[in-house]
Image (cartoon, rainbow, N blue to C red; front, side):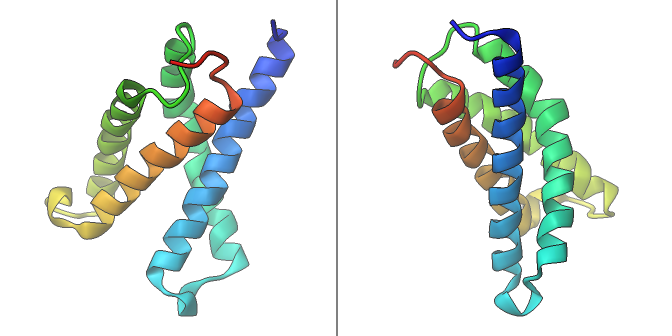
Length: 127
């Protein structure tokens, strides 16, 4: 059994590693000409805050019945990611985020990345 400080560390680690991974994918998808360390750090910070405030509560709820690489968990993370990505996209002035390829790329990648690292770091039992 893990103590609470270990669990908190794992939630933070999962969010941080997911954010860094997603920011690298986003920078690469913009093209290598736009790739920069500063851009990666800025994106990672933004994604980390969203993973921490939106993803971690969902993750905490799902971790009550831990299952590694559970497809249902991926679908739940996907719904959460789609909602957050749509809100952010609307905030940046897009009329309809569902017509943007970047919307789908970010929401699908963010859900898959978070799901993988959640399964690796936090899910103790296998499904």
